[in-house]
Amino acid sequence: MPKKGKRALNKQIKNIFYAWLACSFVFGVISSVLYIQKKQSSKQHLQHIAHKIQLELNSQIHLVDQFLREAETIQTACNSSTLKLLRQQVFKNPAVSEIGIVNSSGLLACNSFGAVVPAIQTTEPIKAAGLRYHGPIISDYLEMSAFVLARTRTDGYEINVLLPSTWLRGSLNLAQYSYLDFVALVDSLTGVPIILKGQYSLPLDTSLFPLQEEYKGSGLFDDGRNKYIFAKPLTALPQISLLVASNNTDLFKLDTQLLIVITVFYTLSWLMLCILLNYYDKRQMGLKSQLRRAISQHELFNVYQPLIDATTRNVVGVEVLIRWLHPVEGELNPALFIPEAERSGAIVQISIAQIKQALRELAPILVTNPLFKVSFNVNGQLLSNSGYLGILHLASQEIQNLTIELTERDVLSQSEVKSILENIKTWGVEVAIDDFGTGYSGLHYLQSFSIDLLKIDQSFVASIGLDNLQSPVLNAMIDMAGNLNKKLIAEGVETQTQANYLIAHGVTIHQGWLYEKAQKIDSLFELLSDHSQFSSVQRQAG
Image 1 (cartoon, rainbow, N blue to C red):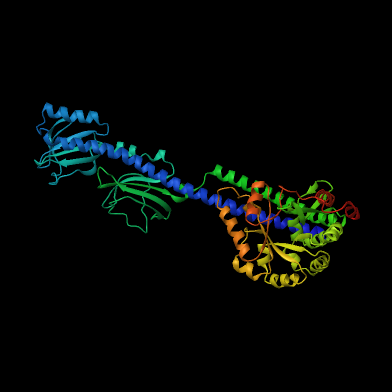
Image 2 (image 1 turned 30 degrees about the horizontal axis):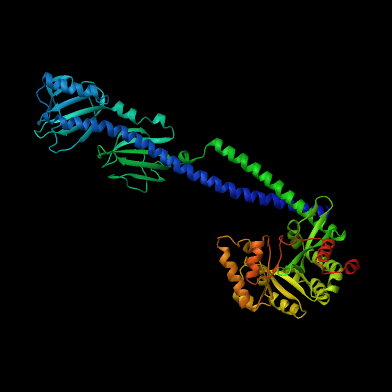
């Protein structure tokens, strides 16, 4: 396989890997967030179920307890008045199946069905106040399992209410909560189940009982499964607690449909990212080859941004800029190709050609006005190239007022820049900081580096006349430059208000659309002729 084809294949493999890595990271984060949300949502849903069950149980128990409190005054004789009250209560509360009256000796002589003859011997009432439970028991009359709530009166009689076990089991209906392992009413002291739906099990690493307050947590249970459990004593009857538990795997797993959607989007995103990366590589490779062709075919050309003395409106110099006359896309701004030129190293060849072209085109102007300022943009990469430094040295011999412009980052990013700038200064070249104020230079750097001129960034010029944070910064920069004896040029001057403000503060050299845009050499000659700065004879000599 040819080397070029092999490199392209390796690039595609890398793109596939990088796309997979990026998609895996992004979708991994998304899946983690969805899992955490699902986990929290499932826990909250399980707790909602528990609260719903507790609400129903507490409501019924509160009603029963209210009746038992009122039963303190019920006549114990099994007469028609007593039976009427007992039967009314059974009728009003669908959860109640039977109400009984037990004397202080434990004899059940009356219930809501009528007089019990002969009386049935039961457990002697507990000599203690408060609501209590026992059971489940088998009702002698209904021959059904029931749960007993009772209170002992001050006269030693017990009034008890039977709640059918079927009603309690219906309240804990597990069928409507398919993913729950069990729902149970248990003794809060011992944990012994009273009513149970599902397979009862408890955490291995936590002792729940006696249970006095709400508990929720995950862990390994005694049936060998990892579960989440919610447990809480009933408000109406704290001796009993409700326990709800579910298998963590079932509770926290993502829906199958959601997983399918995520997988589809993951695959499509991976594919699209691969296509985009390959397209970008091809475009960049194409841009590299196009730049090489542009240099050989002289498609790159200079434009000149005039430097204006705002007090006289005369053109005192130019900043040399680059443009690309693309055969298909037309004239291109440097922002579209300079970054790639810097990455590929073509910036050196382009910059050398730019200086040579400027020397040819500006020669007539320099003959007439030797002090005409010419400024080139330079970066750290160019300063470290001997070929570029050679052509720059040649330019310094033909241009008496030559300036190189660097950004603050270029000046400070390389340790050897300081010595290179000092050497360039011996050629009579001025050093300027472009876009001053947008980087990170301070007083120390301005004093230690060989810097002659500061170009105020257009963002600060645009703040003139506006009430924002940049306005006082502009004034501070102007004052600092004056104290350090540095020259100033203002970029991006677009209004007369801005120009007047800068002139009033001693900044008289301006660039901007208020005066002129960057223009080709012919237009520059016309501009200079209009200002009577050059004769027609000199212009024709160019």
